[in-house]
Image (cartoon, rainbow, N blue to C red; front, side, top):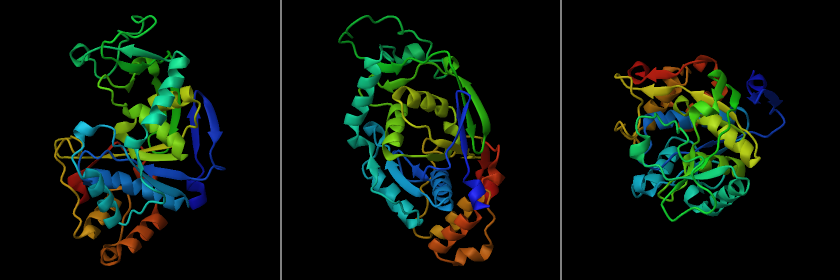
Length: 315
């Protein structure tokens, strides 16, 4: 039943706590590096259906913190696509590009508590490490930071992070194996991990539904949330959509934009990607009716444990 699907638990450092008394607030947070493609639509739809099925609030946040990768007008195209597909948000869209003061405040707090350290490592030096920072700069700097360009890394203790994902099940990560991660880049731009944690806390986000490719970001975010003394959301990581060669459908792989002239077939396909089985006659209904059907039939049961779905298999 619906009430049973919305009784969720999260675990952090072996502590299990109920979230049932907290009003549901979900969000979809795309980066405007290109128009919305099918994989992103599936993620947005999953987040939307989960929020609506639980009677919650659904937000859209634009993660526009990397200007060199953001073509002009991409954010507007994403919002237009969401509206065309009936995915209407409940509050004003939050733009991360306007949140610099909040990010600086968070960094200042971590700096005062000696949880940050400057890092001057180049990409060349870190090549071949698979994104795991070995701590080269941990004990280099004493006192004031010199004028040399540097990023800021969060000092991660040898701690194991446990959490229960609603789709992928029990998860356990050792922070030492993930490495100290950047919160501010050497070029002065804020890192994803910092911005997402600060803004999830600011918006009161309680539930996050996103792709499984971000699963290993969750322990980092749980740890950073604890360092900032903010609440931990409940997480659900849906399977990613893959191409025939096994690669994720993404902007980097030149995924085409979803059609805006006839959204119904693509919306039906997205429902199937989420484990639902809409009747063929539903395609003749309005977008609102199709989404209402999706809300009424929403369940994560058909996605449990799945990591990927082949795009061709959804046709």
